[in-house]
Image: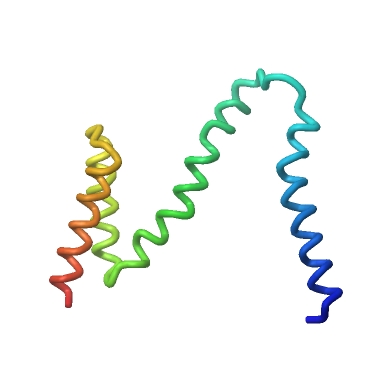
Length: 103
């Protein structure tokens, strides 16, 4: 890749990144009053985090079974209103114990 191509790629990256951040501020003036759009925008960060996290929970363990079991137990623990730290500790312990039994 020559020097010109690298500069063009960097500039395109800068433009697209800033366009995504600045365009909503330019187009949307004032508070959003549409109930559907407000609820959609409220859940976007959670969905994005889930889409990035769930596959790696299952794929990064020695066995996909241990990751799946930890995911299910973590969901159950979170359902019973346990905090983030206890749920993480429980899930890590389950993966550690199941993976050590598999070896």
